[in-house]
Structure formats: structure tokens, C-alpha cells
Length: 64
Ligand SMILES: [Zn+2]
Image (cartoon, rainbow, N blue to C red; front, side, top):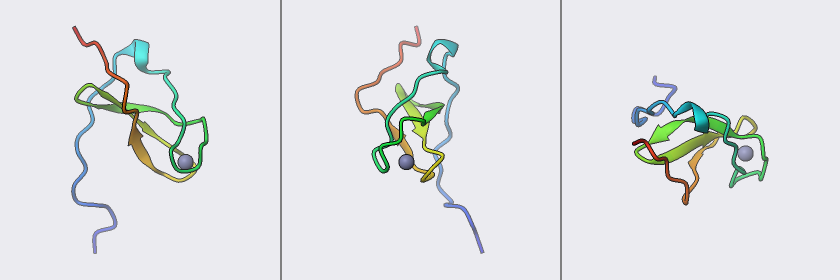
């Protein structure tokens, strides 16, 4: 009866200087996806149009 996928890796907060980053959705190529958090050093974005979560492969966040 679960609606949601049981395994969702917990996202960490993004430093404020990255909070306004945007990326292009790999699915629909929309440019609106914004940062929703980070996984390790990778910024995680979410597309509102197709509800895809993705991370930018080359992005790394300096947390020090
Ligand atoms: Zn999309």
C-alpha cells in the first residue's frame, strides 16, 4: 500500500551559496530544476515538470 519508494536517501542541506543553483533536467531538458539538497558532495536537483530527481555529475560542493 505504499505510495512512495521505501528507499530514499536522506538529503543534507546545501550551503546557502549553492541554494540557488539550477541545472538542466536530463529528462525533459527543462532549466528550472533547483537544488533540493545534497548527497555527499553532489548537489541534488529536482524537476517539477517530470518529478525527476537527479544530481549534476560534475558538481562538487566545498564544505570546508
Ligand atoms: Zn524534467
